[in-house]
Length: 364
Image 1 (tube, rainbow, N blue to C red):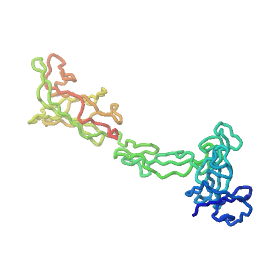
Image 2: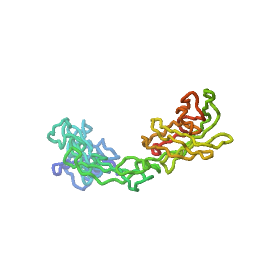
Image 3: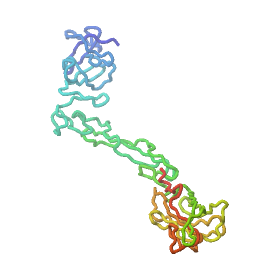
Image 4: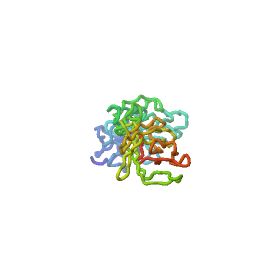
């Protein structure tokens, strides 16, 4: 398209319609311009044709902010409100303060220099709010609150291993108020917001994965080997190398069980029941009884009472105390010191477990 070189004007319906043509005397719409004045155009943008008085060029029909030489004395201090209509550029108004683009194909003059002062003044449609720009109302298709409502759900189902999804919907302007008071839009598509482990899952209206196996522990087996034991001889306490292995095994994901095994090389079977005491660091008694051995290298597994204040996310931290045989249990303190002048049998004690036991959902 050749760059327009000459300006012609025609008064039509009280608006100044500005036309550009390469042939003097004719508008591009073919209307004669006899007796009309003209002037050379020196400010034409060949890309968008804004500033080219007359043709809209590549612009679609709509309202724009720009400069018009015939209205404001281009370039001037402020822009004009222009309209593209059937290919011609129409000067609507020389904006006294500023011209504001409101969206695609929408623009408006700012009504006063004090927009937002709390008073609705002449020429203002609104005086502030998310649906008010330059004191002009935004159209009803404008989303004033992109996250007006949000919800979490389980479109793929709930239960262990299910993921959490979220979706939202927008609120739009109503075209009558500056506040965000219009209708809500449709719900957007579900999007995954949290990926869950197999022991977690989605719970309706919850924003993150929730524990699905509240009593489970990990790992399923933890072992500690105590290398030395305590014995008394002639009222003197001394240590001996009698290794002992302590095990805690998890049954069905939640039941804690406890046993003791001989760890000598070569191993020596227990001949008598052993006394075992297990206490949580918080002071909760979990085991306090004789544990059968029956001539084996390990005692039987016995259940620990773990309903003693442990909650999701806690680490199982215990102190344990073993006496061989159980008949001598009353002669030893929890830290393998003699209750009287001398104690019989062999005593072991320690705290902590390696690796530590944790509630399963605490691993996320």
